[in-house]
Amino acid sequence: MKHILDNPAWNALITGNKAFSGGNDTIKYFPKEVSPFVATAEISKENFNLLYDTIPFESHFIFIAPHDIEIPEQWKIVHYLKCLQMVFEGEIPADVSDEGLVPLTKQHVPQMLELTQLTNPGPFIDRTIEFGHYQGIFDGDKLVAMAGQRLNPAPYAEISAVCTHPDYLGRGYAGKLLLNQAKRIKAASEIPFLHVKAENEWAIKVYEKLGFVTRKEMSFYVLRK
Image (cartoon, rainbow, N blue to C red; front, side, top):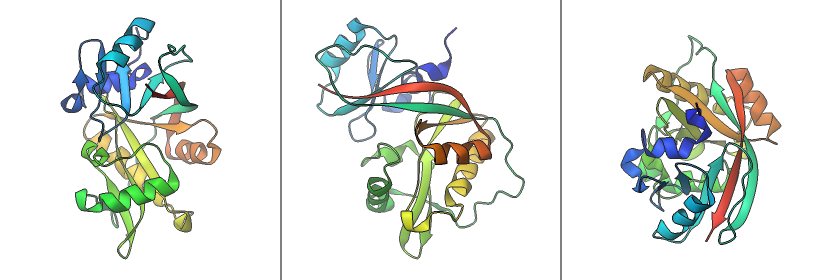
């Protein structure tokens, strides 16, 4: 039996992120302004062709696979990367506090876009905040760190957009945000997970220290028609 997280975008779009789902019983996609992830029920040339013909807008798209795959010729591979898929198996420390964490809303989107463009934690666009549960840390009026939720292939919930302004590294902000996200997800009887670039050794060590364990290496394809 295939694991839910082997096809996280598809399973998110038929469960926890169903409200965003476009497509049909074979292919799915998010609204262009929310997320670039697209998915197919099964990986096949026929389904990639259907995906190509069905998506009603032009953009960059991200396809996640549990192994390297062959992309049909009509698609252009803009970028390819390996990511580790890590699942939280640790314990939430009793002293984890949300003190200093600010719930982020639409008014904060310009600063969120600025911070993610600076730090590049992964795709974040105008309506990505609609995935929900975003929290930030501010220095005065300046957003200096943030994290939130993205894919929700129930019962799993992905922690995403974990980033800290370069001038504020080393202060434990990422760890605090991550543990509070994990605490919230577990309180909702779900399982926290995340994706991290395989070469990002510093981040991987941080996640492991917090209680995340690598489940699988995943292949991410950034595609364009």
